[in-house]
Image (cartoon, rainbow, N blue to C red; front, side, top):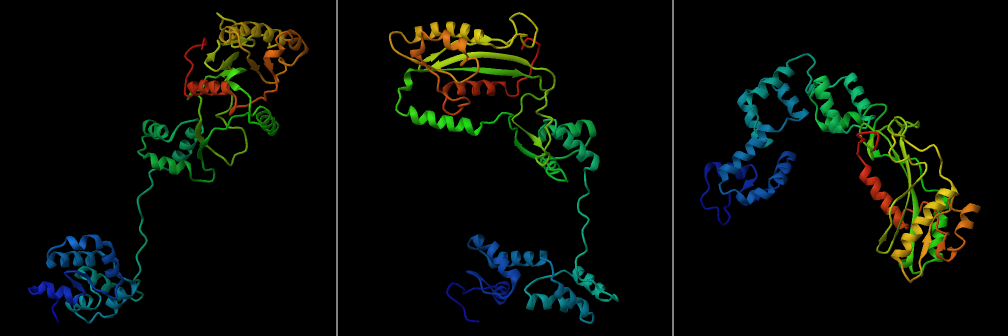
Amino acid sequence: MRRTRGQKHITRAGRHSIQCGVSEVGIKAVPCTAMSTFSKSLAPSIGQLSRVTTFTRLIYDFMRTSELTISQRKWIGENSTITLTKIRNHFIKYHHRKISLCVIKRWRAEGAKNQPNYTDKPRSGRPKVTDGAIRKEAKRLATQGNTAGDITNILHDRKGVEVSISTTRRILGSGRKPLTWALVQPKRQLSQINKNLRIDFCAKHLHAHTSKWVFIDAKFLYVYQYPKGKLRFAWQNLRYKGASKLSAKPGGPWVYLFYGAVGLNFKSDLYFVPPSPPIGTNAKRNKVNFKSEHFIEMLGKMYKEIQKAYPNRGFKMLWDHARQHDSKMSKAAVQDIQHNILQSYPPQSWDINIIENCWGMLDQQLLKSRSKCSAD
């Protein structure tokens, strides 16, 4: 064999490696799928090998661990007259792979049978840790608002089952009724009518001076006693069209209704109106409903506070078209301050009404909060 530059001293193992298609500078093109796969997997580390014998040992380790094909197994089983050493040398010379004597004996014994089977037997795999009752219990816990980590801990404490969080997630997402970790949708959604009203309002007041606007709005607050707090995400069966157990009312809530106003460098106090429960009682709500006279009384107190915040300059108060705002009694009461009112603001304007951001922050604070006493 002709020596290239840098190959003056080549050992016996090195010459054998070159015959197998290996040189000190890389791997030659060998018509073998195993060698091609090996050259791709070890291509970054070839330059780091300094000795040919070390590289040859890596090749033989790879040859030893790779499985035989069906045709190779069949060839061993049909040539039972050839000795074990000759079969081993045949694979090294023609297939560039080294197999153990135990493997040769195994497939020779298989070829001696009347109906040899050279395919791999199905493997049993790891036994299942959970049964049908455990999987059903996991889904039941998920529909109650528990997370995958909580379910894993509960199964360990109550059932003595050792499962990982990934296994719990896989159990919840499998079966005829798979669960999905999704957003808990609120009951009320923005209607298309209110969307059109907001678009018209923005187009009408596109160049208005909003720095003098005061946004007034009411907030209904329903406080429930959730065992897991107010949830945003939970495991749910999206295929089930009925009402979710997470959105059901676990008892009567505490009902609060209050007004607030915000503007540029201004934030008013909160003014509670019925049906908020009376102060100093354990009642969950007031027996009196919200009426126009309650709105007129509240607006009189709030208007004085707004005048102190905006002295000697005009301002515009904005509120939606609630029934108490547009009643005959309310319009007659605010006739004297009509020049400070802009009532064309649409309802449910979460993305353009400043005070809706305040209500959103309030809802965020109430997430995962738990009531400790009836006064909450």
